[in-house]
Length: 165
Image (cartoon, rainbow, N blue to C red; front, side, top):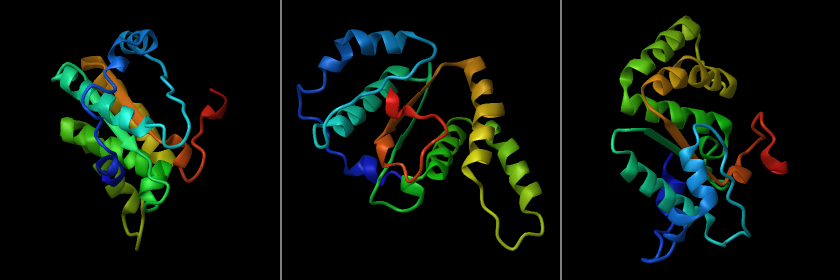
């Protein structure tokens, strides 16, 4: 699931640091909620900038906040380019931070898959679990920052239409 992140080049030393001082970025970091949309031409370095921002956010968080991420990969597997993959990755990362939030998900999976030959999560089910109870419970303890790269490479549209942002 991290293939696209790992394929993204690290920034060259001295580049990307401008982001730390950018007024819009600083405002986004200070807000409790909000979307920061980084736009640019293909190949302009948005994914490299995202990798840098993610690395800096994780370093700055140091236990004071939860930092989650997903890098869509348009040429990757179905999970790497779909909302199901996004939500699976986010739920997995939350579980790595604190496994108690996953117990509800595991119990629900067992209940839903009982007797089924084959069953898998839908994007809506994972989104609902992430939205309630997982993220609200985490937000009671600490802020959450979610970094998503290459949303335009998502195999299908997410519920929110960000194309007009």
